[in-house]
Image (cartoon, rainbow, N blue to C red):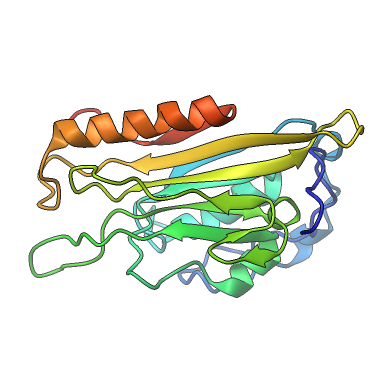
Length: 231
């Protein structure tokens, strides 16, 4: 098994998005790629986790027809979080971000696509969560996860809920003495109150909270997401 990466941010690929495009397959290269890297990013010694509700991976966000993916690419290029948790991908069961897009930005994808769909004439996939993991953090692909980011077992008996994903992250301590540190990172999209797949909402809350508590008992834990608290 490859050794775990350091907590320090390694030099990333100097790429940046071009002008807004409608398709996620747009490569993120161009003149902006020659910008100097932020020196603070080279000395960062913390695990940085961010969360973004994309409300559809290819959704158009404004009058200029900029997609969420365009905005996300700029954020990843500028801030380089170790893990970007994503909610509401709206991916169908076998969909994922474009491999070229991921490679250009230096990230790898671990996803959990929901089986629910919207109703009506414009039926589409709904829900869906995942992690964009920095490639140098994740390591090589291993099964449904990576050498240093392992997918945790899915929540069971959660009242029909399928929108939670947990992973265990393995890191070398910044002390340089070879000590290994572990973190559990979770992301949840809690289905809306009118979702027909949810049989028992109280059971959903009990299950996701019990899972978060269990992960916290194992290792330091970070839990983010869209919990539809108004429901």
